[in-house]
Image (cartoon, rainbow, N blue to C red; front, side):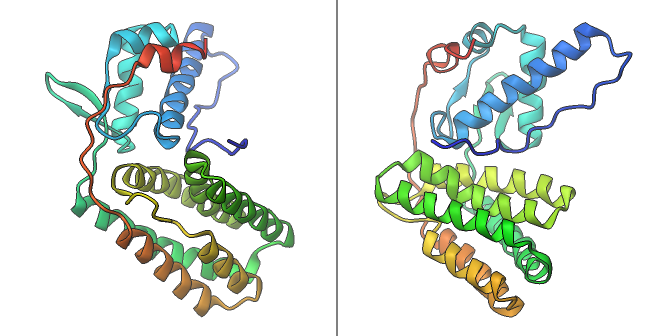
Length: 247
């Protein structure tokens, strides 16, 4: 898997007078949070996986209080579900939720590509072209986890090209959630997020054709949603083995 930017890292700014122990806690929270998100997006933690506290605390060398703060953050980001007396599990989105999230993405990203048509830099176009090439290569080689990451990274890179940090934060969460949905509902062998469609959208952006770019993005995300197929999962992951090597 290539080095792509992690989904929505949320580090708090450090104060010059901040207590070293508090700063270490913040760093540990971000480390644990990012590792769990990375595992979700690479499908090492499928939807419905129980996030048992004891092996996670041991794997990350953190206490339960810190781990629970991380799980609450992930629940707020819709990556994890918290249930009373049942603990935390990787989110298992419903069909209704899936439809609503894709609808929000269509509304947001249609506007995003319209703006990019007027202001995208040549370097950003070149970077997006490379992402599409890498995505196509991963798909053809059967590297599903890598392809899945790159298909989401294309959309995040488009948001970064606009330079709107609030938009990046929103899309980070939405892309993470739709990646969960792909992991849960993707029909076997289905190209849920087509790299050919990514290339066509980029052609329209490079040509400055805002109407075409917006229409292609809308069709692209509708197609991605249609290709998803619900398949119940029952998984048990060795969390200590998965995360223990990070220490």
